Amino acid sequence: QVQLQESGPGLVNPSETLSLTCTVSGGSVNSGTSYWSWIRQPPGKGLEWIGYIYYSGTTNYNPSLKSRLTMSLDTSRNQFSLRLTSVTAADTAVYYCARGEVGDSGYHPFDFWGQGTLVTVSS
Amino acid sequence: DIVMTQSPDSLAVSLGERATINCKSSQSVLYNSNNQNYFAWYQQKPGQPPKLIVYWASIRESGVPDRFSGSGSGTDFTLTISSLQAEDVAVYYCQQYYSTPYSFGQGTNLEIK
Image (cartoon, rainbow over all chains, first blue to last red; front, side, top):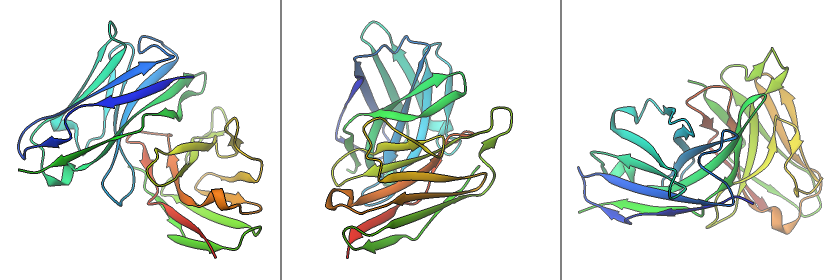
C-alpha cells in the first residue's frame, strides 16, 4: 500500500516561492512503474492537475503553470517536490501529491493520494 | 486541451434509488490502438482527498462496491450508483488521462433527498 504525505509552509507571502515536499512510503519514487503528480484544489472549488515527474526525472507540467513551476526527485529520501515561484492569491489551495501507475497502456489515473496540505498566499 | 464537462452540477437522490452522473469530454479519449478510454471517476468526501473509483471508463477500483458502475466511450461517459447509500454522499469528479494537461470535470455534488 503506497502512502504519501505532503509537507511545507501553510502560509506564503505574495510574489514569493511556494515549496512543498511529498514523502512516499510503501513504494519507491525510483520505480519505473509509478509516476508522481501534484494536484491542487482551491477552497470550495474543483481539481487542477499541476504536473508530474517520472523516476527518470522526466517532467510534464500544466502549461498554465509551466513558467513558474519546477518539480524534482530526491531518491535518497524517497521524496518528490514542487516549487512554484511568484505566487499570488490565486495559488491559494489544498495541494495534493498523488501516484499513478505506469503500465503497458501508458500512464494510469491517480490511485494513491496524500491527505493534502492547505497553502494560503497572503501577507 | 481537453475540457471535461459534468452534468448535473448537483443531484439529490433518495436512499435506495439510482443516481446518474454524466461527463462529456471536448474530444475523444478513446485510444484506438488499444481500444481503451483514458477516463476515470473519483469520489471526494469533505476533508478527504479524492478516491479513485472507476478507471478505463468501466473498471471498478479494488474495494469499490458493485453498486458503482461506469459506462461510455469516446466523449460521453456515465457514472451510475444503482442504489444510493448514505455513505455515497460526496462530490464526484471525472478525469481524462488521455493527454496532458490532464483535466477534471467541475464536480457533481451528490446529496440525499
